[in-house]
Each structure stands twice: as structure tokens, then as C-alpha cells.
Amino acid sequence: MLNNKEKILINITNLSDVETYKKVGITNFLFPVKDYSVGYNSFTLKEIESTASTAYLLMNRLLTDEDIDAFLELKLPKNVKGLFIEDTGLYYALKDCSLELINFQNHLNNNYKTVNFWLKYFDSLVVSTDITAEEVKEILSQCTKPLVIYTFGYPQIMYSRRNLLSNYHAFRKEKPKTLEHFTIPNGNLSLTFKENDRGTVVYPNRPLDGREKVEEYDEDKIKFYVVDTNMLDTSTVLSVLKGERIDKTSIGFLEQKTIYRVGDIK
Image (cartoon, rainbow, N blue to C red):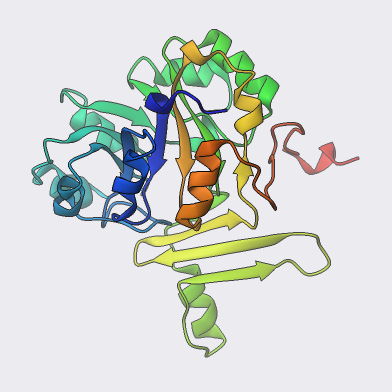
């Protein structure tokens, strides 16, 4: 599993890990950008440049006009090859640049018609983690460009521009936290909330392990397999790359469709 190291894209949590992953054959790295990402440890452009790696920038925030203008004033490091973009306003500001632009509207990229619409503009996109493996196969069979598949890690359930944890603890007159686990009462569901000054992201309590499923996909239709190190230790990530079994994981919706409407619940 994941034998083609050139197609693995590692989402970096600690800069010191870049050299560790290089030693096992990883050549492409995804860096959340400070002030332009939420839910991840983020880095300045200078820090990203210091890694001397093939770098893609993760910018998963919804941006204001002022945010976009400020970003356009920045000088990107020469080792940056492309950008993963949540906000399509940023796409329009960058559409004539020489960098690869990859659509990161994860939850929306869930059918081949939507995918092919965006591929008229973007170089690639990240396929939704809310769909089954069979639905992913259908998208891959119809797509006009190679796509990015989230393969291992904690996928985002939702993103809010609000500081949900800070507001919650302020209401309860408690000390604020930036990372917290919640268990839903009377339900077999636990969630992790992670906050920075740009908003809050909610994650499942177990990482998605799609390594077996990606073996069924047409590799020629895949640009990258994302291994997301957020909230994972380095030894676990190395075990993932070796194809070793990881305990307490989930296959998400890969074998069972999302319940989209209340009426779908039987």
C-alpha cells in the first residue's frame, strides 16, 4: 500500500519531521500557512523555505478581500510548487500565476459533475471524504485531470470562522482551551475541536484509514495520496508509510453512504 512514494503528499505538523520523511522516500510536502489556515499547526513562508523541500501551501480559510490583498503582497519561496485553496476568491487572484492551484473545498467535491466543473479552472482538487469508495471510483473514471485522495489522517468534519471553544468557555466562565475532546451525550460519538485565532475545525475521534481502498483506485487518475499528520505522532506516520496496521482507525464513509437527510434514516 502507498508504494509510489512520489505520489504521497505529507501534510506537515512539525518542521523537524520533514527530513525524517525524506529519508523514507517522501518528496512532496503540504504546509499550512500561518494566518491563512485553520485547524493545523501553521508555518511562516520563511520556515517553509528553510525546509528546501518541494512545498505545497495549504490555505483552508475563507478569506476577506484584505486577506487576499495581503497575501498577494507576499513573496513566495522558490520551493513552493502549488497551493491548496479553500476560497475561490484567491483562485481568481492567482489564476494567471505559474503555480499549481488545487481546489480544497473538500465537502463539495463529491460527484464527477462538480469535479469536472472545477477542473476547468483548477489543476486538481481534493475529493470529498464524505463519499463511498464506489463513488470515488466513479469520479475517477469520469474526471478530466488527476485528483487528490485523502488517504490517512483526521479529515475535517466542519470549519467555522468563529472561535467556538473560546466562546463556549467564556460563557461557562472557564479557562479557554485551543484543543478539546467532546463526547456527545447518549450517543456513540466523540469529536475533537481545534481552534486558532482564525476559527475552529471539528475532527472525528479516530483517523480515517483509506489505504486498503485506494488500492482499488486507478493510480493513473490520482495526483496525490494525502497522509495528514495532524494530531498524529511521527512514529505512527512512519508505520502508515510502511503499510503497517494502525489500531483505532475508521474507514469513514468509504463503505457506508452519508445520511444526507433526516428522512433517509430508517
